[in-house]
Length: 219
Image 1 (cartoon, rainbow, N blue to C red):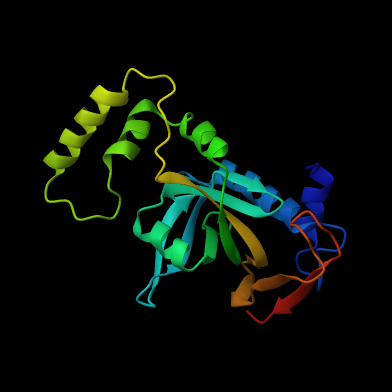
Image 2 (spheres, rainbow, N blue to C red):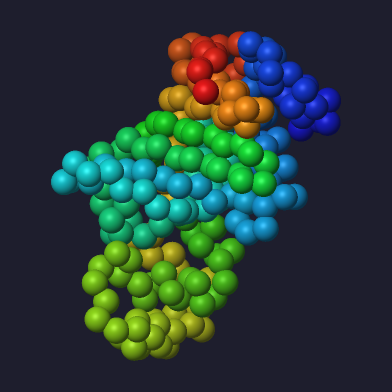
């Protein structure tokens, strides 16, 4: 992204429609770039909310591992609580909150699984112990003691530790959030914050300009 586009977004955010000629993806990319410079830890961290079989919402923090015209991608154990919830109900909400920047982005959409080749490619970028830990962990299941986890880690280390690449578990992989609406929030003086919600009407991707319906919201 050019500095000109970045500056245009920041300078014009107070006007009624700062998104003319600018795609949502450009805004997300610019804000993430800013967060890389200002957030002390995990600038790509986002809270995701799912609905389980019991009808209750559950949220937790994950890391955004890719940003593309559809939305964002995160990886997880698909047998975890969130993985099971998304297999039953693919609707999801995700929230980036950057306290240092006083900005946040809220995404709403549905998930789809990413191809297995992408799972292996990303899995292999993780540290070796993290890869083995993914095999050892029955994520979200009850664990009677940490000793049991360490014993499982030792077992999978003996099985997979000398393999290159370590295979990605079939129960572990990525979810692509296909964004249907996106809200940009920016802190304003006296709590008169700037909020814009963009909804997919004629738009086909986050790269589209002019085709997202833009609505300013009350703070």
